[in-house]
Image 1 (cartoon, rainbow, N blue to C red):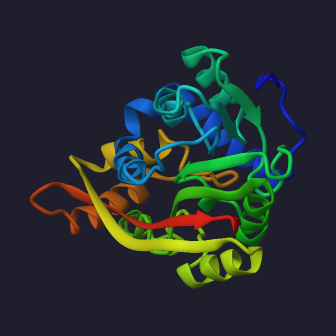
Image 2 (cartoon, rainbow, N blue to C red):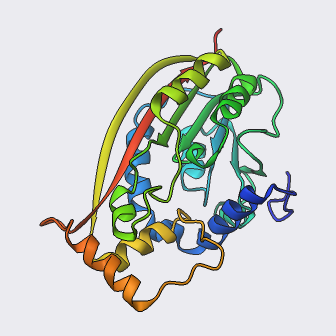
Length: 261
């Protein structure tokens, strides 16, 4: 087993993402209610059987462990960019699962070695979606399947409005770009759905805890916010309040992919 505690040399953007998620690891499971809820929908679509399973962007290993229980005879790999997430996962769930540090756009796996890829809200962090799809096509065995949720533009739009940051914290490819990447990879898109999921929080502190707590914010260098800026952001967010609380939108794109037999 490759030790998740040995960090790979990473390009600068990957270092920032890996660092953010490694910091988030201790509190991730407590704060990832939206991510967990979205993953449950994906979970319902799993095939009946699999022998070699990859949890791509496994984070703290929550879904990886569930995959191991769901497919007790399968070889399970949890792969993530962030060594802190992998260390947390290994400590929590042990060595029966193979924990592997790696990049979705350059998977450290053999050709045609996986028959099921599960990936919940991970590939939106990859700047080259084409490379990700090419790698999935390479590692999936003939007839292999992938179940993926990713995020589309408009995600966290309320947060962007409050902070007056139109990039909404995430830069994600649109659905047509993702579909074009799938087509170019040679994978078959057997099913896809777009859905907006909205989650509600009691106040802005809870909103920001849910986002920072799951690593979904890479801090800008030398970012300093004054009390006045914080108060203004909070006031803008309050204008969006609904009876259930402050809304946060996730624009989800669910993909079912298949490698040609």
